[in-house]
Length: 88
Image 1: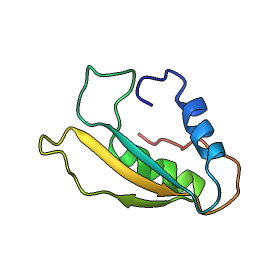
Image 2: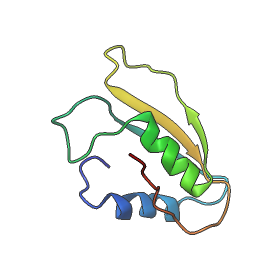
Image 3: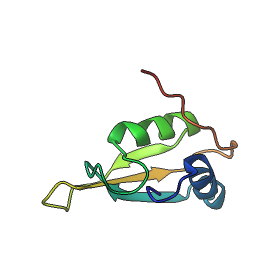
Image 4: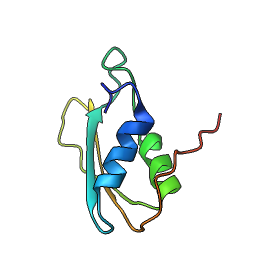
């Protein structure tokens, strides 16, 4: 999703395509500041999970260079997609 300019639309599409109980695997570049439109951290997915009631499972880091962030989100309800609230 780091190559998609409209992040809300991308995550909403993923959410809407996932059934309750379904899982969403996100594996994105981590710390690569010149890659794609956006950079993600574990907080990005924690906020996404919190806003939408997902169960979040960080995955083991299989990337020795520590440049890939992988997280597994499980959809736990049939609520409409919510954009996370970001705090400073």
